[in-house]
Length: 104
Ligand SMILES: [Zn+2]
Image (cartoon, rainbow, N blue to C red; front, side):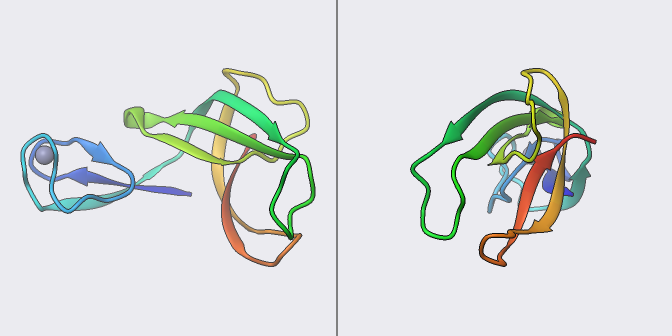
């Protein structure tokens, strides 16, 4: 799940969390979960770092409140505009925890 932070004073949402709200300067935030996003764009990366099997799909998704999130995309036939969710998983190539995008 994708976590974001909403300003308690004006409602502006940020990811990652900021020290102060850029809209009202408040320092009070609440953590929220963003459930559904739409794929805005994606690309295939063939020149990967060690431990990653090429090609790696990278997707840019826009979630509720206008929050954009860039992450590895785990689906066979991505289409711009399709619905995606952010899911916690473990990278099968190197065992690291990561947050990825996939179809709901
Ligand atoms: Zn604010």
